[in-house]
Image 1 (cartoon, one colour):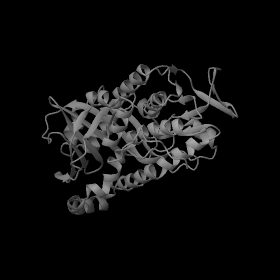
Image 2: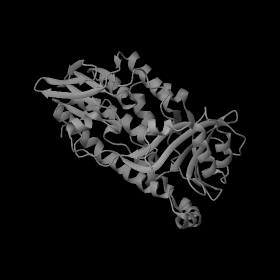
Image 3: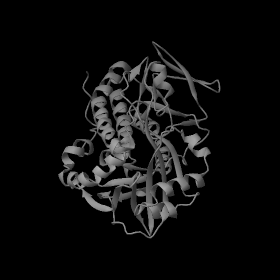
Image 4: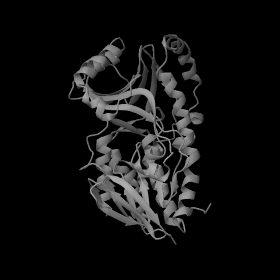
Length: 396
């Protein structure tokens, strides 16, 4: 029998609603507290959900709703020096699902509410106190809430992470800023294929959405760190000038940048990666999603891992005799997996910001590397991961 009957979930992004819905499925009363004054359905751009992430959403009954809003992309290519190189994939696995982050937020919130999860907005966590009987959260508006456990799903700048361990590391800047857009652009692009393009000066990616629409994203090298709000303080027209200058000589990077209007441009600011976090839990509090593991966007697994961890945490709390035992089981199940993905992604980041000499070398060696890539070795373990909800979690 579970030693946990109630939970406070801090953060209403991706991991928060998933964790709360999974906790509800596990028979644990959960309530989400979000700092924003309302649903954040307009923050962020596109992201990819890997087969393992969508399978985890199936556990909470959200998989089909996400598939309905996603673009299914079964094939991948690399573009180096303007040449398309087929990238290996796992033929027995479902395709990647490309979704708008805001639409994903909406679907996950709707699923949580339909499951009976209350969501409160304008609740910015400022402190928490744990005791033998539970944990009490204190919010900036002066209100409080108490439950058996507190789940920190509050993102890469997590307050809960700092409350658990004041010395915990913060996120590292990858040296890139993120941008995205969906545009109408008459370019020749392979159908149902996402292309990872190494341009003359910077990396970008693009994929067809049908009816002449193309989704694309840019990883712009930058020595200056800009948060989301700082990046959005700069006029979109100015960013477009920079993007058109950076990608102007690339095909189709130049046409994509020139086809993008200020209204279409999605600015996400600095791209981050979380270093290993020493303490995942403590004092009836536990971390999930980007608050504890945020591989760079190069992994293609950030959102999927957050979803997985949210479901696995609920499973561990369902089966653990007390919160500490459940938290220990959760960390045992998740740490090596998420840190392995982060390590793989960190290696890819170096190829996105090469110097002039390295860029020329890439054009020579990438075609050979593409032919030698082994999809099973690279991503087999990552994408084949499935959560057995019915299986009882063994104690540590």
